[in-house]
Length: 509
Image (cartoon, rainbow, N blue to C red; front, side, top):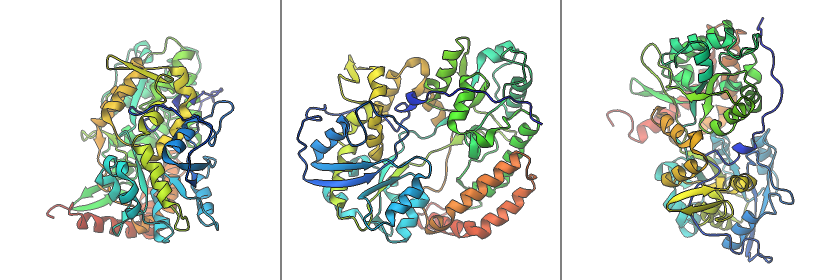
């Protein structure tokens, strides 16, 4: 029986909205005419996009705000926006795609969803439209990203880029370490010692056993640094003997799961982890129940900041990534494609969609990432300054900017430093980028992924969760590997290795 009490209260996560790399950056023109009465539009499109969980200021919504007016005025395209609920987002897109009149643009972050509709020949090839109307897209998006959305020479999506290369690093309560006479851990064994002490030695001094040694998210989220100590990451492909092998079926993954199960058995790991959505984990961090976890690089300004507000004595520091017995360490690397913008074959507005996205990637990039100059930010002497009240209030702009994100390293640096030096946002990214584990498969999703990936992902998540929680023995891993292979994994592996050979990346090619 686990002896943990569930913490209460909710963390306000609104401040995260534009602090993630997908929401902001630097460069561009002002909003002159953005709110002018008549919109100079020559065409209209209907788009379906991810809300990113943002909130609009009073009196505004996704179809009535200065940033959308700014886009419409500068593109001559009138835009009707639909924001489906975050839960079941891709399922909503499925319904829209099969309707008699689908939208003109749908945005998804799911490679499986994208390739499934490529397989169905339901998407418009965009090569000619990009050549004619996508000069900024061609200039800003690298070949590797275009390769991710190209099948048989045809471009079926306009990619939005990941501005960051990785997201996780471990933060801990230094005040808890000091109180218990512990040093910052470096090896996995030292980490285990620290986490056990945090769970058992009452680091918050309230006389109750109500703190966690480690807390993670549902679906094994926020486990990357611990998996890295075993030389593996979730949903990645690694080279073994000249071939690519899926990480989820490797012996190293079995070892990592056994380690996490041992933390659960020792009452070190939060027993509620299968139910931990991000708001639940945030609640536990803010209320002082967690003193060590794998944080997102921006958590110093959100979840950790919320804890510091509640407890001014809380002192958080980043740690070196845990090193396993074989000397391995690191975290997962993100795909260069953050999301896919597709045009259904039934749409007649591919030209307008490309013009719309080309503006976002080009002249509109600065305002949509950073906000309107002199309202949200100013620059003097080469240094960027941000008005945080307006920055948060106008964070909804990220909905539009995220559709065609590009990578501007200097702009990212300036923006993150302006968001607050104490939060070490830029330094966090630098530490992560120095410890990335490369996923060797970076081609477009394969046809078999479109057919099988959703069910295989569900099988993996359920099996791994049950193993960690002791509901299934660790030996169940071998049976999982067999099921994974038979349920489409072998088919996917064959296609991945065909890509590996055809691209000349296989050793000796």
